[in-house]
Amino acid sequence: MEETTPTLLSALESPRLVQGDSTNAYRDPSAIYHEGVFYLFFTLVQTEADGRIYSYTAECTSRDLLHWSAPEIITPKGQHLNYCGPGNIIRFGDEWILCLCRYPRLDYNRGDDLRWADENGRAFIMRSADLLHWGEPELLKLKGPDVDEASMGRIIDPCFVEDKDEPGTWWCFFKQNGVSLSRSRDLVDWTYVGCADSGENSCVVVDGDEYVLMHSPANGMGIKRSNDLREWRDQPGLITLGQSQWPWAQTRLTGGFILDLRDDPRVGKYLKVFHGGGPGEIKTQDNCDAECSIGVAWSSDLAGWDWP
Image: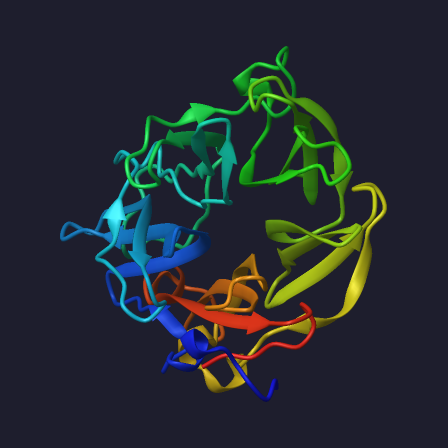
């Protein structure tokens, strides 16, 4: 555990930023820090009074990580849509771009067996001028312009990173055959490059001359490193933070997202948001489609972690 933390982090009283309940699950967080404001994006899973379960992408904001605005849903409703799983937010030209996925679960109701997205899961982007108002989801043709949507295969969990050696070239990591990679200069025309062994919920940052991939295996978070996006090596250890003392994350701790705020005096660390589901050791609707909360931790080196 680190001995000191910056003032803003020291003020936090709980590792949970947003707390789930019996009808709301907060999952798959991503974030961006812009002009003194933290924008937190996440999957919101809601169970309605009639038992039908819907997923959305929602966001809330904070200036201090302690006080958050009420969640605002930014995607349309429909079990055939269920836009969720925001990967990250990048600045591209004069717009903000959010990547996310479609996660269909048709005729899915409380009391059904727990199930995940069907084969129509696909990756999308949304555009914004101000990080608050967002356009309609636009399909990402990550397998190439000549591959029609029906032939793409199931794609979820997209995440962007700019090439560290070739500015203006963007990579998209997404869940398919482990983690798959495609590249583009304009976020429209994509070239599929290949895949690597990995868990889900990819988050990629650049650390010096390396790419750092945080991913989610069955539980916890792992880190892989690469110089070239082709050969990856595993960083030793599985990141589970305080899970053994957190009933709210007993089922699974996952979905880690990293913000590099080491140069910001209010934070001075890598900031990580993640989600935990619980209680219970077995995944059920009660701890996957409800009772999921978003947590926070921080690190100086992506190896040792601290939390409130």
